[in-house]
Length: 496
Image (cartoon, rainbow, N blue to C red; front, side, top):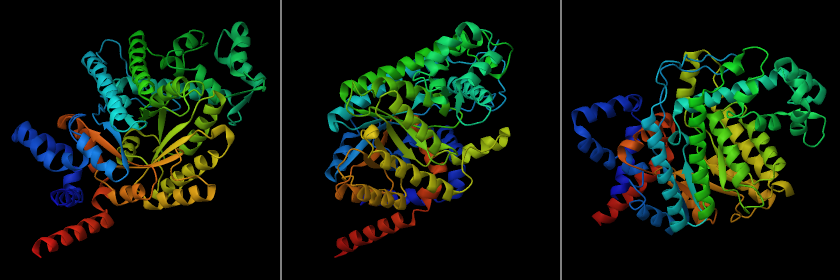
């Protein structure tokens, strides 16, 4: 009963616009005036207590045990976030604006030590999944493994490499005839006559006569860019985006951290969901995930996908990204794993786009987001019936009942059993319990995203949830009605 009262109170808080819009300032003010102890106690009794399972792997076990009683698994999520707003934002686009990093301290090496510590936390999280839910899921945030400024730099490098491909692809088809590509390469690079044969043997591996972006992106990685630009005919956006020696070392360290986590996931037979984050970080995150999938999801090492990427369906062009990544998994012979979400950074993404003067990466209307999400589920479920993609797995992470019901109808139409590993459903702890527990009761694979961590570490996550999902949290009239009815029922029982 106390948990229901707390849930009702938290939902009311999240419906107060003033509190939601000023959550960060009020949180900082509370710590300054009331101190950390009182602030943490208040948060544990409200937001933290409702949306987080505890502060460490030991304290979350009662929550996981309670979920299992209802046929619901746990996706363990160490919810510390390292998101920062850079002092000098980078503008990634057709022309890239980069700050002059010479002579200023861009990277904080204390954060490198913190990232090293996070590796051990994530490995411990994976081990906990093996103990309490064998074959289950753990969530990983890449901003906990590398400096956000570094991720933004990597994203710019990848974006400019993609822009270069688009310049060579004069017809915009995504597939460039071999001769056209050779000429385009010679136009930009001085080693064309010397290296073009080896490059084409790699890019046109099956003698199709074409080069597409999938093979190009595998060749053009942040670590390979310095070698490539050494032969640029002139200084352009790609050469200006080239990483420094310092950044190359930091990139290597971040990738090594990710590989250590993936090695542990393979050892423990635990699936890893790599969270999506802000658009300015996402190309770097995708690049890292693709490298991990190529190594750890390969069909000769595992029967199931171990590494899952997350796709934010409020982003323009996301369905095309899913299609390309699925095709990539078939080409390089590894299992495809995807978590589908709508997205949790809508307000901040639009505000940043307006501030920096580039088009918003987010759909203009919620209906477009709904359509993209449902189309992505349908596309992947239909593909799962093809021999080449029979091992693909989808985590349908949504609080939208219509999307869940459509997915279930699709499963029935396609003959996908509710206990098949092809699809599972997931909601956040403290939200949409009516959906999660009903799915578990009906025998579907149902999960709760179970965040945990020290109160001060997870507050950025919790405040973002309150701000970006206020429409869900505050206006969940159906869920609030369920809470109200259950509380009234219990009070009647007590009175009688």
